[in-house]
Length: 329
Image (cartoon, rainbow, N blue to C red):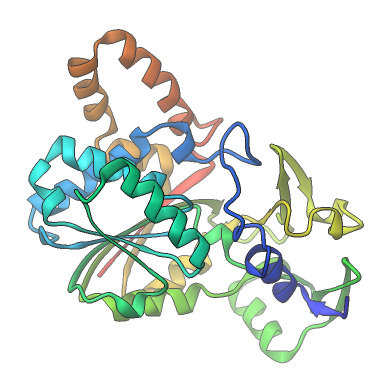
């Protein structure tokens, strides 16, 4: 394999022909990792409750687009739609549920999964990119989107390349060195695409509320976090001497640099804020949803669900490791 910049190698690993995400990996106990979506449907329920509240307050229109990026098979959209129906049934007929998915095979899988649960009850569109959306008002959401963006590896003036599935280092060009200096990074990952994504979102909708959950750090640590997930085991990238052992068959990720992400959205005209996932879900009314569930399903069902919800809220599990970014314009 010829020498390639790590950014390009990572992009091919995840999104190239036969790439890891292209194959729609299994998520949950039988897969390589857990997400909040696989932990409890009340994760989607809290997002739905927030969406309904925005519409009732007049911040969003009843016919808004409800747009998801990184939808995998469509489980989170299905959870949100189900809770919207429970909380405000009439909105299921007016909201325009939309998935942006560039991979054709995943678009087909999403269509099949969502239609199997809702038939034609949803106004559903699954599109390859944002250019085909035609809505003035939008609620945009995603779970673990930005950690799936490709990134460079930078170390004190050098940038990583890959040759024969092994890391090698070269002097960074002036553009990369300048970006690292602007972001305050001496050593670590430099993500690609945050700025492009923010500007595309800004251009697509006149009014937009964006909620995105992901894991990462608030400030530069000047150390590497890049790692590989395979069957719930974590392999630090620099502990693997032959990357071909995992190439396209495991998840490759790193901590999201939230200071970089927020900077990109603010420059694109958004108000931007971030907080821990547990705090955000509580603000979105998760306790109220659980009380409603107890009234309808009984205490035993409520008790079982609170055990699952604990995974979302516990600081030692997903509660503080994951953050919620809120972008508004």
